Image 1 (cartoon, rainbow over the protein chains, first blue to last red):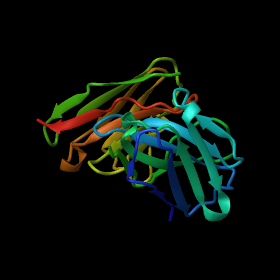
Image 2 (cartoon, chains in turn red, brown; image 1 turned 90 degrees about the vertical axis):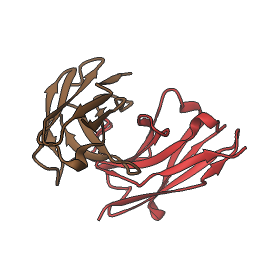
Image 3 (cartoon, each protein chain N blue to C red; image 1 turned 90 degrees about the horizontal axis):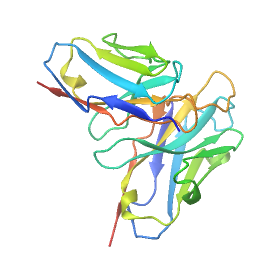
Length: 125
Length: 107
């Protein structure tokens, strides 16, 4: 059974660095066919893709947020970690991790077949 | 960067009727398009990939069509649980982009 679960702080302060962890089960982050992305959704708004990590540790980032994002993985822990620096109230959103599963290795993007439940990140003054 | 535009933003349909949702890409994406359904407080759920292939467990009342830049999601005989939000996503190029969503509401 494939599952993904996000964890991290519920509240952050302006200028802080956000660190989110996605713990996966039911598949291996070393599997060449697999990859994991982070996607966010401000309340009542659309989905915004943030970053992706391949089985090879190669990464891809949103053009507009690239300078603030780092994605990494710890295969032994089955975890994918996203850090976002210099947090601002406009970054208030539910943050999801989601899996892609292809039939063979590829650097191309793909659709997301499994999603975590999401974690809402808001700001404290 | 490919921009995805969904229309309408809100669609009012009566239960049992048909809903037709549109998604347009700013450039050709072949058939590299997925549709997702999102219920309140839940993560998106994959409905359609490859523009027209239903994901595992998706009822046959959901169908997708189109290629290039114009795509359609059709929901026939709307059930109560179908009155939620739908997103399209292109995966032809990085970054994978989502449309703004269409909310299907009860007429």
